[in-house]
Structures are given as structure tokens and as C-alpha cells.
Image (cartoon, rainbow, N blue to C red):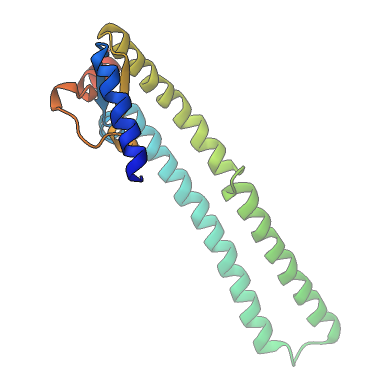
Length: 168
């Protein structure tokens, strides 16, 4: 962040403070690490990720094995057998590519599962933050993880209040 941007933010914060604004902050990483539902979702995602990774590596190992066998035997094969093996390897390579896109790509199965597990948890956290903000009459709540705070007194840390709200 350049110095002029910091000055503008500081000026904005100071001017708001002059009008009696109430500020607080949270540590979203800490909240996520302490929130059981998030840890469970992460656990499920890790299991799914390992499963997909194993499938991918098994397919890649199979292709590698086919290629090695082909290289050892290609001079002993008939033209038809050689063409058939090359076709099999090409087909498997295409399947591996499709697997990567369909399962691991940005719109793939793993990403969709991640969204399905994370979205409800993040919605609960945002609801808890909003409730803490409303109950405490805070005008602004910042997240220290996002890097928006250069300094804050600990008395404005609302992380524990959000965690307590999530446990209700």
C-alpha cells in the first residue's frame, strides 16, 4: 500500500472517530480454525481431494506403464498392434485430461464440492459477525487477515464474541 493511500485511510478513520463511530475487528483465520463446522468441512474436502488425487495418479501411472511397455515391444509388434496401442495411449491421455478438467478444474467436481461445503459455513460466520455488530452497535468491523488494519487496540477485537455467537 502506498503512503498516500495509508494517509487517506488514516484521515478517513480519524474523521469517523471524531463523529463517534464505533469500530471493531476480527481475525477470520482464527475463527475458521476454531469453528468445528469449518474444520469438519475441511476434513471432508481433504478426503475427497486425496481420493481424486489417487484416481489421477493411478491413471497417469497406467499411461506411463503403457508407454514403457509400448517402447519395449514396438519393434516386435505388427503395424496393426502398434497402431492399436498408440490409439489406446492417446485415448487414455485424453481421459486423463478430461478427468483434470471435470474433477479438478476451476468449474470441476472438487471446486463445486468445496463451494457446497464452505458456503453454508461462511454464511453462518457472516451472520454471526452481523449479529455481533448489531448487538454491539458497531459501525464497522474489519478483518485483520485481509490486511486492512495496521494497528488496533485489543479491546476492539470481536473474534471471541463471533465465536461465542457461532456456538449458540
